Amino acid sequence: MHPALGSRGVPEGIYVDNGSAFVDAWLLRACAKLGIRLIHSTPGRPQGRGKIERYFRTVREQFLVEITGNPGGDPNRHPVADLGELNALFTAWVETVYHRQIHSETGAAPLARWAAGGPFPIPSTDALAEAFLWEEQRTVTRTALVSLQGNTYQVDPLLVGRRVELVFDPFDLTRIQVRLRGVPAGTAIPHRIGRHAHLKARPETPPEPPAPTGIDYARLIADVHQAQLGAANTGVNYAALAGSVPTSSNEQLPGQLDLLTDLSGDTDLHDVTVLRDSGVSS
Image 1 (cartoon, helix red, strand yellow):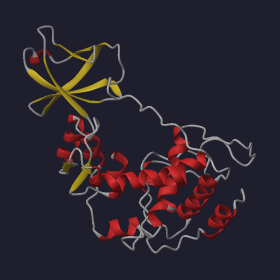
Image 2: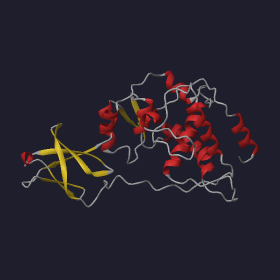
Image 3: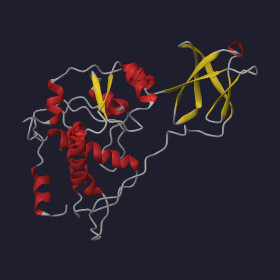
Image 4: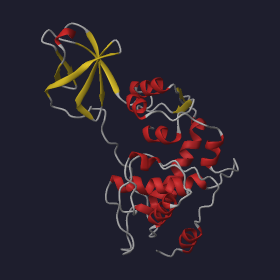
């Protein structure tokens, strides 16, 4: 959600199921900070989740199958090196292929249909960062200490006996902001650190990989995506605003999506489509 909101803007509401990640207090806090209405689907009614399940199926059949495995030993196919490269390939596929294909029911490409409902406000970097911080309350001990996830921190002695809010990045417990009734009250100084990330901030277990096709289709799409980013009329590239733009598909892209304002559908994917349909490897 963090990169999506940073590049596409803030919607009025989001529709999610009742999985543990979506009923967690941290998502509710993020939505409250950004003014987003959090809507949960009705338990026991899978019809309401059909669209996202269909999207997952498309990702499995058109993207994941292209980047996993190489049973034939094709020298033109190389395994994905790391998470950064996977994100770069997925961003290229979403922006270049999925968002620009005409939907059979709506008669419009997903990106064009989204843009037609806008404009959507883009949150500032600080507001977005604040929304995705986590928060817990603690009472300051007589020795001006607070605890979090087994760690202890020193705070301002003037806060002894007060109930304070600890605001933090769940992936970095070495930096804790202290607030008293929402007002900043300094930084918690690490006293004893045994855990550097929140227990709930752990990576998900990856699913079983699907069978590959033998064609390095994802990198072909990545090349087209890089060509679009280099064109003069591409539009706003939020990846460039966050850092350097890679010059080749082997360099790592930032994690957020790119906002491509060219919705004219002029992307030339003819060569890529022919290669895929004919079964010829690049």
